[in-house]
Length: 256
Image (cartoon, rainbow, N blue to C red; front, side, top):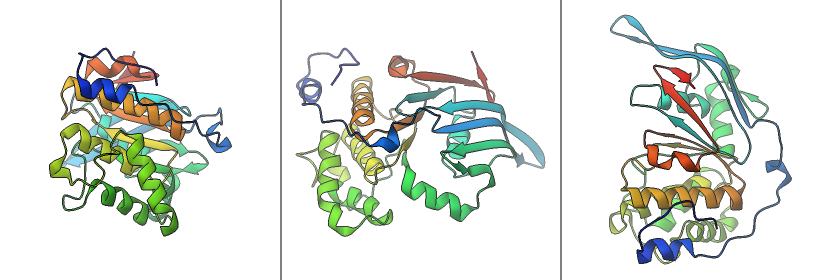
């Protein structure tokens, strides 16, 4: 696995970097060259105190297969609102959002929910783990909710947790894990049902620079092994160098 960051000589960082690479899947469905998702002329506004607040103002973007794309900007710039639209959690006032062959801007809530369960994984800044469940049980729960056959759970949970470097910590509960380890569990949860797109909202915001670097290294690894596209928000300039493409947002618009 490529070393994307220069770290101090800590045993944890080095041990993780030197794990053997996992064979890349050759799934033809992930080898398409056309955009995985396109956003065209998207506007989103909200009514606040009887007045209209324009949050997104004519967004144009695309996500290509097997890329790591970052939405960069300050709090309030519209990053999270755009991420919610991309993930089908919200709909635009104007414009089009197309994910694969699905038109999210025309789909019902139920239709978007079914697509998310199969094709999209979410990673949140707060990790969003069940506190009384072990890492193994948290990932298993994600498979249960996605409707994956029970016969596949054991092998898939083990694979995902080992892929993020938690092979020896998979039976620990969140309070027994560090912040970086909890975020790795969240990543394992997000990829468990084999989505084609991962959406991550400030995944390194609660981590120090070294842990943040390790999480980005995990992202690069799972992109290759699981054939996944990742779109994430950030305001951390130290991690931008690993992105395939960066969209900078200011006041609801992209700037060059």
